[in-house]
Structures are given as C-alpha cells and as structure tokens.
Length: 210
Image (cartoon, rainbow, N blue to C red; front, side, top):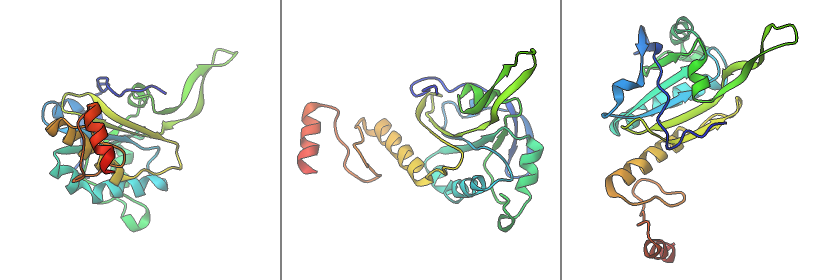
C-alpha cells in the first residue's frame, strides 16, 4: 500500500453526480486548489450495506465540514448511472437519497489504482487471458488534502470496517490549527485543547501539565 502523505494528490478527471441529481463530466479536484481543503473518501460499492451508513454519516456532518471550508467528495468504481439510481432510493430502503456532495464514478478503476486503494489487480493467466485477482473495488480509503493539493492524512480500511466521521473532523481541525498557529497537535488533541510548540521546551511544558 502506497503512502501518499506529503505527496501531491493524484490528478483525475471523471464523471460524477453532484447535488444528488446532476451528472457532470470531467469532475476534478483541481477546482478546489488554493481555495479549499478536501476530504476524498473511497467506498466499495453502491447498493451495499456498510457503505450507505458512511455516506449518510458524512452528509449528516456536511455543515461542519463546510464551516471549516472543507469539500467532501466520495468515489467508488460504480458508474455515474449507478450512483444516480442509488441517490434516488430513500434512506429507509437502503438508499442514499439526500446526499448532496459529489460522488465520482471511477469506472476505469484508474483513480482507485492511483490512490492505491483498489482491492485486486489485473494479470494474465498461462493462456495469455486477462484475469482479475480480487473483486476490483475500492477499499475504504480516505485522504485529507490541503489547499495546495498535498495529501496530509490518509487511512485505509478493509471492506467491513466503517470509518469515523468525527475522527475525520478531528484531523481537519488539527491540520487547520497547525496551519493557523504553527503549533503541533499531541495525542488525542481536539479542537479547543492546548497544542504545543515543536521544541524540546514546548514538549516538556506540555507533558508537565498532562
């Protein structure tokens, strides 16, 4: 698994559903460069079980992300038509109706491959036939990208392990605190907590209080 932290987030341009109802072509994160932090998260499949709980969880906290100037973007290897259909299905039927942030269609699986979250790979068998080793869907990868397009945080979960949206918000708060104040954030730091200076004296002072 590649570590993208500290590197430029891989570029992509793909179809997506935005505002829960409109299919657009050539959706890219480039539109946010210099303006917004981005939380890009991958999920395995539309019309499944853990996935809608995550998509609704991000939607329920979307105002919190937007207050912080953060754009939330989802992505899976399903088609844009599949995304659109799932968005029309009510929540009490397992659908994601009401989700408004963009959902990208990685139908070629290149985005998942470039972010190194694709579960499986292509190969050739002894007869020279192209085969797939694995389900060829995305793990639950999540990437926090700064305004310069640099990945600052990433997590990757296996398919059955749902993520914590609150932890994602905590990482956003930590990154923005560092950018604003120049301090570093210790273990279990939350917004409003004391941070510390990245010096031996700063660490000693912090530890003496905790």
